[in-house]
Length: 459
Image 1 (cartoon, rainbow, N blue to C red):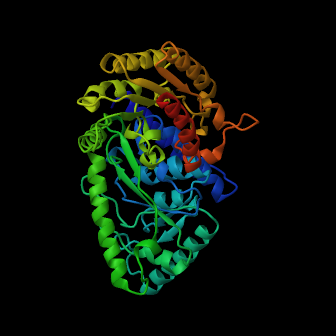
Image 2 (image 1 turned 45 degrees about the vertical axis):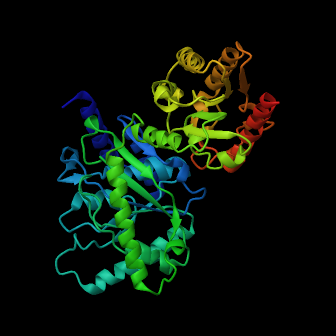
Image 3 (image 1 turned 135 degrees about the vertical axis):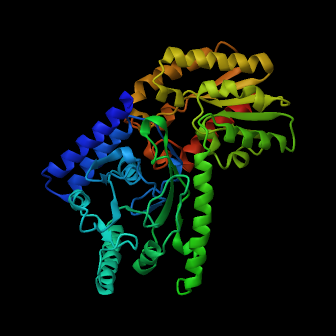
């Protein structure tokens, strides 16, 4: 077994021992300890978390997910495993973005599953009986009593603003066979609760593989309220049809995430199609860079006086912008490039010297092919997501500005200082829940500053 795998498995084993032997003063402390420990463990290997911009602003949401089986290598004691995908949700999503690990809906342990019971009794999660894991001779009355208890505890949890984490399948399966059919239980609970919380679909893949040989993947889809997709709760057929549609969507989502390519090939293909459908290829103002551009849904409306083309793609590094440049801009002749690059490169632990060198190469690429085009570059924004890089970002922005100012065809837009209040603190309202992507207020600031430069250059 490779060293990386040994380290991961050892970390899981040590974590498990600390949970079952630890003396915790409350169930919440166990959950927080678990989330913090698992965050460190998942960081030992590669994982991809997509769609954080879709996270609701407030907690009290229901996270649903397709449950992926563990790899057999991760049995810890007497056939007990720590389910990786559900712990990923608790630690990397609920705790990371809402400061609370949330409350999971889990199945009752079978009589012979002593390790399962010892572990999960530490957490005081909400328990239900799963049809696939029923004790012998259990009465219908006991199952019904447990269901009523589930409805009550789940409602109370949501009412307190806690997140619920639930697998509607009731079983786990391999990535290739996922998902199984979703059951109605959690959705019946939502209907009976009268709370109508956001439901956030999470798509999971690869948690059944050895961590050293794969990339764990999770994609956060757009949240919805059950009331927006079922117009009559009294009609059971409406709920059944909703579940059929949800399963259909999940099968497609899982299949797409399985094929997900870290090289952005899928996104680039979509951008090329966008280019081919351009009504006019004259006087193009090309917005080029990372997801802060990609997620600017009102870009065309905000710059309706210009023929804008949004070529932002999620997670783009400067090297990617260079790599795909020829493919994206062939048969085009932009008169202006608006850039937002460099922020993602910080996550690679690149030095400012390395990043500015890449930025220079991108400028050379643009100027060599479009010598008459103007370049406008938006400074890297400050964010709590990258608060540890605050000083590095300021220094990098200075270097980017100095490089741009070597040509009077270039312009630099300093939004860094505009994202700080009078106390030099980051203005949180300019960001979504993930503290990285922009809110509508943040985009208004960008729009105003970019329009200033565009209008000035046009006059």
